[in-house]
Image 1 (spheres, each protein chain N blue to C red):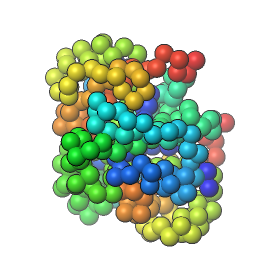
Image 2: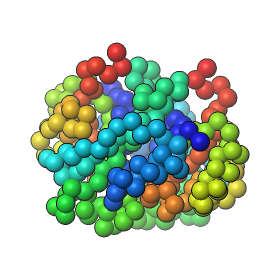
Image 3: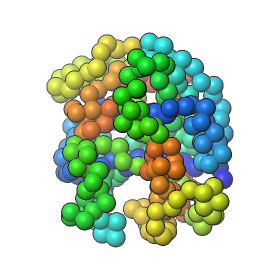
Amino acid sequence: MKLGRLNHIGVATPSIEESLRYYRDVMGATIAHEPFDLAEQGVKVCFVDTPDAQGEVGKGTQIELIEPLGPESPLTGFLQKNPQGGQHHVCYEVEDIEQARSWFEGKGKRILGPTRIGAHGTPIFFLHPKDMMGQLTEIMETPKAAGH
Amino acid sequence: MKLGRLNHIGVATPSIEESLRYYRDVMGATIAHEPFDLAEQGVKVCFVDTPDAQGEVGKGTQIELIEPLGPESPLTGFLQKNPQGGQHHVCYEVEDIEQARSWFEGKGKRILGPTRIGAHGTPIFFLHPKDMMGQLTEIMETPKAAGH
């Protein structure tokens, strides 16, 4: 396997609304996306775009803001430990999700649940942070239209 | 201020050597850089390149591996809490470090120490995670040759 693009870093927040104000007013981001619910994963999501090395906004690694959808959310524990939120996961792209799944299984890495559809509408899975040098790691299939 | 490129994410590790094996053998990275000491900041550093949206390796957001240089390192506490390491900070580029410093001061954000030379050889400073929605945030001046 070849290391893919760092699609996004997942940042947990108690309030996407407050985070969007922060990224706009403090960090100077242009807020180009609307929040939406990813009910299956128990989170509300909103992407914030960053520029790439050529300065093209939306081509750089994104910030994925994630807020719990109710007390059963898998984020609830994280926010109990980190009430302000903070860095939650990293997400790398792969060309073929099934090949990637076999690759990580072959390396003895624990995959958290089945492959499912992620926030970008393509198949994803998560890997256990204890098998990934302390980082909760999401693997996502590159959206077919991306970069073309 | 306008949100700059996400230059790198800082990932703490108890061993850069072990991390490089992980990024190469598990994540499929090509290891293109050598570790070096950033004695002033009490850390050993090594960058790992990722591809951008066009697939160009070295143009995407980098992983900055950081390992403590001795027990006085500011990383020691982080690794006591997270023995395997993990996500430590995010670093955004700005065009002018002094303007950025004034901007964040004007927003009432706590800056951690003086502006100094960072791992890419350009001026940097860090902002207090409690003022930055839980994220230790590094601001660095874009290297003059980057992206040109």
